[in-house]
Every structure is written in structure tokens, then in C-alpha cells.
Image 1 (cartoon, rainbow, N blue to C red):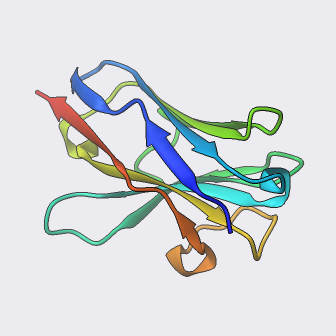
Image 2: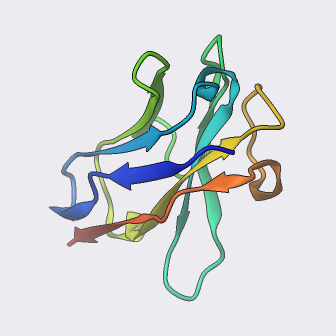
Length: 125
């Protein structure tokens, strides 16, 4: 198991940037696939981005492609989500997730067994 703590959320104007960070405990962070998900009010939690353990292969939801970038620093046990050109519809609680089952990038919620507490991102119009 790994513990995850997100940070970097907040209020931002539409069109602006924001960077989320997720710090992970544990020495085996480098072998975990990592992902970001988000959940808006009265909506299901949805996939945003994922990155594989070693080669750093990424995958994105269509709604964030070309605007968001996921990256990881295995030396710092941290994964990032750089969000640019934010839109009001990006408003949600963003969750970091780690999979101790897979090292390849994963897009399904059920592939992740470790979750952070979430960080609120609010984009004003």
C-alpha cells in the first residue's frame, strides 16, 4: 500500500494554469502506475490522465488532451498534473491514484487500489 497526498488545488480564472502535485509514501512508488481522476458535483468520478511506472507512457481523457500534462519524478515520489487553459467545466475534486497491481498506464478506476483524499479545483468564468 502507498499513501497519497494531493496539493495545489484552488480557485483560478478560466484560461489560467494550475499545477497539482501528489506526494506518495513508500519505497516502491517507481513501480506503480499513477493516475489522476476527478469528480464534479453529482457526477461520477472520471479518468483524467495516467502515466506508466518506468517509461512514462501517458494517456489522457479526450476532454483534457493538449491542455493537461501528467508527469512523475520517481526520485521525489511525486506525480504532477499541469493543467493549462482551464475551463469552468474542469471544476471538480481531483484525486491522485496509484496502482500496486499494474506498472502500465491504466484508465479504469478499478485498476487503482490507492487513493488520495482529493484536492478541489474551481475554475471561474
